[in-house]
Length: 455
Ligand SMILES: Cc1cc2nc3c(=O)[nH]c(=O)nc-3n(C[C@H](O)[C@H](O)[C@H](O)COP(=O)(O)OP(=O)(O)OC[C@H]3O[C@@H](n4cnc5c(N)ncnc54)[C@H](O)[C@@H]3O)c2cc1C
Image 1 (cartoon, rainbow, N blue to C red):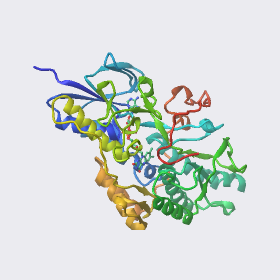
Image 2 (cartoon, protein in one colour; image 1 turned 180 degrees about the vertical axis):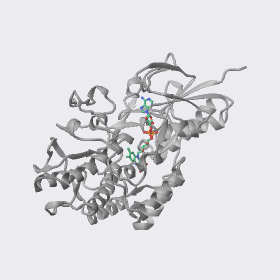
Image 3 (spheres, rainbow, N blue to C red; image 1 turned 90 degrees about the vertical axis):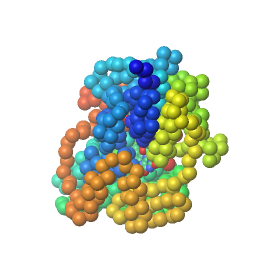
């Protein structure tokens, strides 16, 4: 019997998941698909702020890889080396074991990691927001701060525990702050704080407006909704230093807080830089067919790839879920074409617009160029997420319904400890453990801020 070509997909996020889904259906006679990913699920990141806010149960935003891609072989692990000449990928499994996978075609879809800036104290005292552990940690941490504030001996301690600083006004930071204030309002409704203190949320960005990389309508709507909820939006402001007791802003003011959420954007996963191939601001340069120049057997897509934007010559497609999802499909089609099934095609896209979920019934949306706000935008945004989720739709809709009619469940689960969610997840040597403090990371000149957050 003829051997099937080995297609190895590294990363099962938006791009990798979609490529695997296409290939296991359209090229099942040509390709044996292996998926290498650290977790056994695809994570629908845009709904993560709702997990942190206690609206969605964590598993709702995950989709089982083996359950939904039964024809793909799942290998749990993290790639740490690619031998382009030998056509192998080495990896470490979740228990520290080492392995190597050989391929005939390789799809690199490893996404991005938190972006760090060399601001003193940030690596030690800030938390990122990039995956499930961070969302669960933040939910517990915020709940705990409110509970500790209620028992705080004096007004200053109470005020510091009830102050939450989010850095980065891109869609991640904006949604975290918008959802966070609703969560803390719900928490203090149940157990009002002494000393007349109210939770205070501050959202900072160095840019002159929120959502600086998105349409101005989205920015204005988000700003208005946040202001109405009492969130202090400080544009053209940055963090100079973070300490255990608070943050020093670049305007000289010190804000007492125990919570610093770092959402200044992401940078491409460093695995692609290690390939030694041309990069564009840290992303692996590919041609419009998503192949790596000089290596027609290697494809890259999603946040980790710099894909020429054929709609805007001279530019590259931004790091969004919409692009990653569609590029995954194109990568799948082109891998299949390289194996003799179908025709390859260049990646082209029509912008479908953007939605920013602001919690409650509020959202800012710009679908197909139509500016929407208020409950209509909220309905469009939730409808979009339901349509885009590759699984769990009924469960997500059920959670939304329950949240609309029942009070939010506010208890800590204590499953994720602070030291297990270091800000720099891409550099294990920088990670904190209970015994060793984190080291400050080096500056990262190639980093960018694709979700619009900046500092
Ligand atoms: C909180 C949050 C909210 C967001 N909201 C929106 C939104 O509303 N709209 C929008 O368009 N975009 C949003 N984004 C951005 C969007 O999620 C990304 O652009 C998209 O996920 C990129 O898809 P990807 O497939 O390239 O990477 P990812 O979806 O991040 O997937 C990468 C996969 O590769 C795996 N991986 C990483 N390194 C390795 C390795 N070495 N070996 C093996 N596997 C590896 C990861 O575990 C992951 O499964 C959001 C991002 C975040 C963090």
